[in-house]
Image 1 (tube, rainbow, N blue to C red):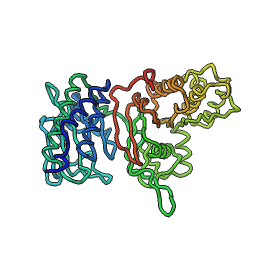
Image 2: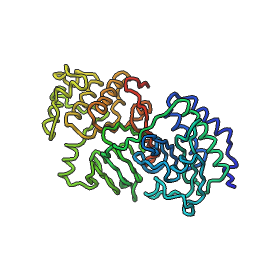
Image 3: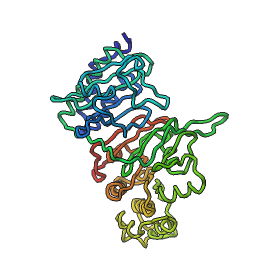
Image 4: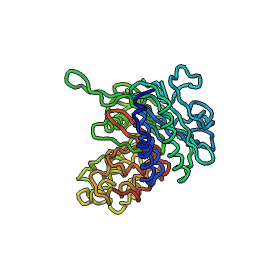
Length: 409
């Protein structure tokens, strides 16, 4: 018997889950918070909440904690451990994957992570199994025991009750196209006699027409990751793939083309040229773009069509930030990178900027990746990436992104 399991308090863990499910209005928040508790209580390296897409009969990962991005992965309902558990409605405990004939590999396998031991329990509502919860590998290297399996089953049952009460419809969105792919990316800088590793094995896919928010404390590596995506910094190891093309180590010519034609940038500081009007700031970028949009139309898009002759000093901070958004949009980029675009703004003007950002994705079809410290803003994203110490710690898919106009902080 694993002594750590004996020392766990099932009642306390159950109460934590119950509080999590009762205190939040959003089902997604309830699910993600519950998985975090399950992973912590069971001292696990990784965890996944899988849900069944009844149209395709495939399992979709709604939220996962672990080393790799599995957002685009789906599995057959009767394949893999997760599929077997969802199909049969019976829990599984695997002490050693190398000796279990049911185990054909984990979606987390690779990049230095190997699934060795796991628990997988069904999410059963009153009529059917709607998915499962899977936890993988103990942090201390020990195996899961029966007491931990029972605890996991008990916690998953509480989650299933909430799903049944609030309802959940899942679509796998299998037609999504990967725009950016980071594959085992590391970034190191010289530090004294050695090196400092700022990014440590990043694996992440970003899809077309997607709004992604990246959360993390200062120094976690999120700005470095964005700079690598934007061609403003270079990876040490790994790959950067943009629309199927390798830009890991581009030539100067390819790098210039990449930044000029594919990427738009929005920064916390607006970086407008003070001696040019709002329209001239946009026209300046349009003149060097390959296939620019009409500068006046981009001004109209951000709600400042009547401010074209104003200089930056004659506009508020929120208006200047919207001009910087229009400047990024006029290039007709495939991807816009936004680094804390609301940090210097008050709530009202910040919300105005978020409404514009939302419009870019939902109506203009541009992919947006935004760095922010504000967890409330993450509620409007399609996916939320959390980072810590140079690694991705979790990825959450928002089934029902909140409209920007309803965001409050």
